[in-house]
Amino acid sequence: MTATTQPAFPQAALDWLAAVSTNGRPVPTPRALLLGRSAAPLGAALTRTGTDLVACDHSRAGVRTLLNRAPRAIPTVADPERLPFAAMSFDVVHVHQALHTLPEGALASIARVLAPHGHLAVSYTVRDDSVPWVRRLTALLRDVDPQAMAGAYGTESIDRLRASRFFDDVEERGHRLWVPISRVDLLGMVARRFPDLEQDRLSQLMADVGELYETSARVPEPLLLPYRVACWRAGVDHSEFTSQLDPPDDGLRIRL
Image (cartoon, rainbow, N blue to C red; front, side, top):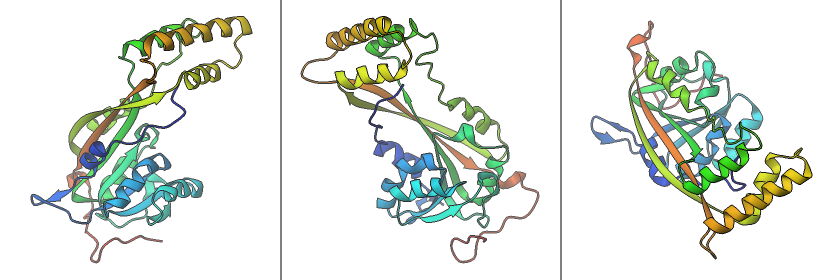
């Protein structure tokens, strides 16, 4: 269950994920690949930083989603395990909310297109269930459905990244987000979660959730739905490649 308004991606998290340096000096105009449509929330902010962007998804619809946020990015339709770029073309590859969806072979493909100083930037925005009022809400919903608000986000896929022979030095940082939610919106979220619940039981649940809101909010301020933005940077390791990787001679090259 998530808020109807998607939380903004925190600038501090993006700055850390996107930071690139070589020989101890920042890269002035980094080359970045947005991989997968779910990376779209990062596109607008990266465009404002002057980053050279390529928007890549396995479908045209996904690329259009990326271009809606980063209209100046170079669009590319390709499967992540067969990226059609020259070796060492990018300083950063961004994957947001999607590492767990990447097929076998995608990490090797990403490593091949990263420059020797480059890194894979992985991020997930997940609900923070440690806040007391959220724990109370979870208990109410799980009284109806034990699987409600289970929170399976895909972050366990980081273990696969840590075990990959193509990456090392996996760093991690976390950031907090607070998204305002009104009483009406909270009740609407609950109602959408249980569309087939019997009317009497739904009415009781809605009354309980409404009471929770009224006893937890500081009127006239709304409740704040808590999120955690988990971020990882994994440095590339080309030593496992059996063939020689040569950087492009004149900037980014895409094989068509």
